[in-house]
Amino acid sequence: MPFGVLRDIEFTPALAPDKIALSEENHAGQGQKVWVLAKNVPDDLSGFGWNTAFDFVGVIDVTPDGQVLVCFSPEANGVDVDDVATVQRAVRAFAPDAEVMAVASHDWNADPWSRGTWTTFRPGQILRAEAALARPEGAIHFAGAHTARRWPGFIDGAIESGSRVAREVLDVL
Picture 1 (cartoon, rainbow, N blue to C red):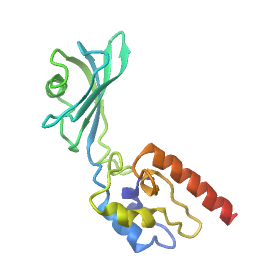
Picture 2 (cartoon, one colour; picture 1 turned 120 degrees about the horizontal axis):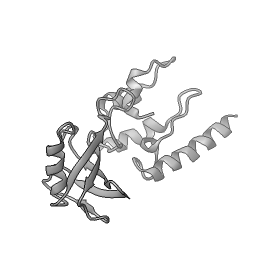
Picture 3 (cartoon, rainbow, N blue to C red; picture 1 turned 120 degrees about the vertical axis):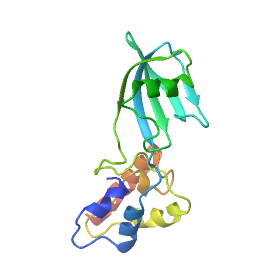
Picture 4 (cartoon, rainbow, N blue to C red; picture 1 turned 60 degrees about the vertical axis):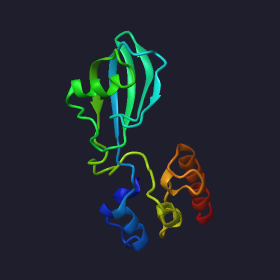
């Protein structure tokens, strides 16, 4: 589970204070992910922006209805996803002729089951988080990208942590 939600779960016995403190602090991954169906976008578009509403826009699929884009904003509500014209302006910073047909998004930051988007540690946070978040507590073992010792916050770290926890559990058994 994302570590930002640990604070909302009742554990008996209670989790260690350092784990709870990290959960209350949460991580800096509080951005926005937006899916867009658009026309008039290059099929191979993959662009990074600076001082743009989206800091990444990329085509992930081409359909008969248009290009499916995945877009990221570093701000939790950087782009008003309920306003197609606003989304279109943001996409046009990358593809000037884009015509946005549909928009979908989910507010992961307000979601009580995630409390954020992808794990991005705050400055200095990983030094405290690495040991605390990965440490077993009684019969509970913690895995996930945020518990990785190498590649924390990445899929490689999630895989590594799963392997680590499997070894921990086998050692206990």
